[in-house]
Image 1 (cartoon, protein in one colour):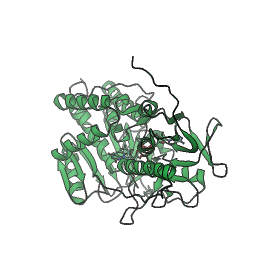
Image 2 (cartoon, protein in one colour):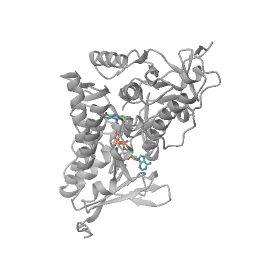
Image 3 (cartoon, helix red, strand yellow):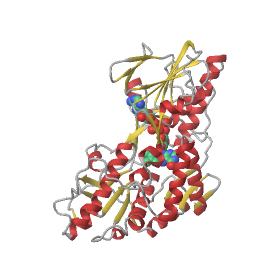
Image 4 (cartoon, rainbow, N blue to C red):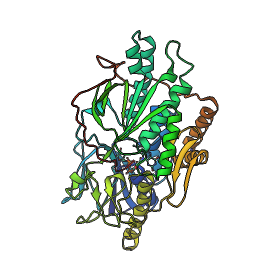
Length: 454
Ligand SMILES: Cc1cc2nc3c(=O)[nH]c(=O)nc-3n(C[C@H](O)[C@H](O)[C@H](O)COP(=O)(O)OP(=O)(O)OC[C@H]3O[C@@H](n4cnc5c(N)ncnc54)[C@H](O)[C@@H]3O)c2cc1C
């Protein structure tokens, strides 16, 4: 066993930096402050850091949850000045300069970094969350995986063709990167992996609908790449419906532009809203609930409070809000960590953050992805290889990188998906009373705002 270093860190107690959230932004900020003599506390409601961009691979049985999550304590263990606290933050006392946790305990701060991310926005229909989960947590991914796989199992034993068809229909709401990735992955799961494993049903007949209210999918990508993604999805058998609003979602059915479509699996990827951190602080937020921050990521009017990542609204060089992307959160975290260190140690002024676009990407499926670098665009096989390299590189920990690379290689050669386990508690095969597709007279569209990130 390697020796364990329990030597107390030589920290300077004069300044205590508290970071809420160990996602991409919070963790990068903590790492930049690591191994300094500044006392740092990282608080997260989970004991692990989650690599959210690969969650869809857990939901479609390509990877296991442990492949894309790593204990926060383990990641930060080599920095003796960082203390990790497992707890849910429920408020911030601005006057007392303290963070309140759900168990009633209080953590005082001198500098506060808020990096609590975002959650899905159901545009006033929170009741849809139960039947159409988004993809933000490991629980979401496990539930979706269980639901998808259970639907095939139920269809296999059903004697009713209409019910079978309903169970073998998946509707993905939202044509952003998450929706595109999810629709492509379900198509590959059904057409390649499951195709040989059932006797009574043919999984290749699975119907996958990708519904987008806007005029095209991948709205934040250039036309050329969005068009390529659409064609690649259609080649996989996905029905791409653009300019169609989802009006209603209930257990086992979605109403799309006046048509009720029975569906065993419904997935939400249509929009996000920031964490409630703006409410904790009582400060101005934008329509997506993001805290408006100054160029140096500080929260205007609050001394020593900063926000970054999905929960902050920062502007790029062009004056437009920066997108909700992992690379934005990571770069902001690194910048803020370094700036805080220089400020605390040497009294340096806080410099402005500048985002460097390392490329916006989405994967459609095997050998098909898009990459937009602004000045340069890539699509197809090269983009796919680059996507894989970037995502493996960004995974925390050598062990994960190796494991995930090997699994992808194996899957590429065999079309197999090893994590086909039904482990979450899902309602077995609940489909609508009348599982036939039909028109609904007088249905009214729900106005859908465009996604702001992710
Ligand atoms: C399905 C999906 C796919 C995506 N794919 C990509 C992609 O390919 N490329 C890309 O760049 N971006 C992608 N994104 C967006 C990217 O994941 C986010 O922009 C990024 O995670 C934001 O980082 P963050 O640090 O702000 O928040 P997060 O990474 O979400 O971290 C927030 C952390 O705060 C913790 N937390 C939240 N509330 C509390 C609380 N009250 N108390 C304590 N802890 C709390 C959470 O547990 C979490 O650890 C994707 C997003 C989704 C949902």
